[in-house]
Image (tube, rainbow, N blue to C red; front, side, top):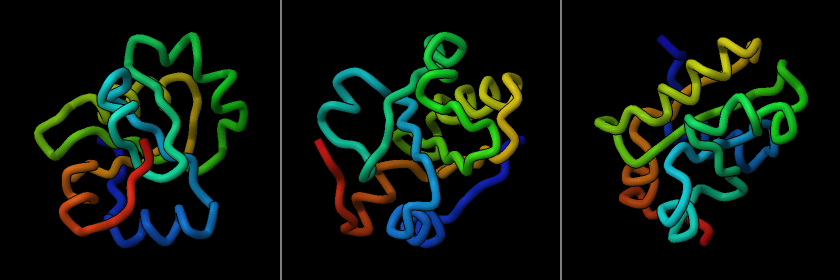
Length: 107
C-alpha cells in the first residue's frame, strides 16, 4: 500500500515547491478544479506519459483523486511504483477534503 500524506503536510510541500502533485481524475474533473500546480495523469496514461511528465524517478510525488472512496489515486500510485518511482505517496482524502478545508484550487 502506498504511503499516505496528510492535507497539512501536502499543503506545506506544495507551498515549498518540494512535491509534484498528480491529479488522477483527469478530464473534465481536472479542468473544473485541481490542487495548485497539479499535473493530470490518469491510470490508462501512466506508462505512456509518466516518462515525459516525471523524468526524475526519485522526485517526491503525491497522487490524489476525489475522496477516500476513489481508487484512481491508488491505481496511478501503484503503476508509478511499478515503473520504478521511489517516492510516491497518496493524499487519500482527495480534492473534496482540500476544498472543504477552504484551500485554493486551480481550474
